[in-house]
Length: 192
Image (cartoon, rainbow, N blue to C red; front, side):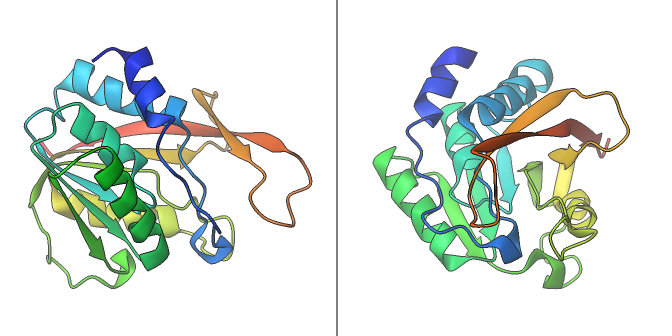
């Protein structure tokens, strides 16, 4: 599947109806999701036929895209049941059957609960900017434990040269602008 085709398909994925600021719920744009997934597959061959975990999966755009790129199986993890319900609907609409969902708090998982169970872990974790300082690092710790091979993650850029811009639409009442670009790094961590 070509990048533009993947992005076009991901534009049909439903997103949060009422995002929760406590969980820093922002939808991963179809463009960012497609670029991430296409790079993961075309550069590293870490999706096709692989068992993939999607941490903080939200509405499932990364898992849906991974399934479109022939992932062997995807498991989405999220704390919010309402987000997981949207994910379920998305999986049904795209007729994706090789996914499963786990409702849990990743920060409270028993140590080693999913150790080395996934070939690849993908995520767009909470950046830790709204009362969740360090949350992205907690997600990363869980991901590194869960992955056999590699972890792919977006993290907010602070002092580095910008690599990607995450177009964040106004999602909450306190947002003053229609949208704002957040600078993020797309990182790969390898367990090899």
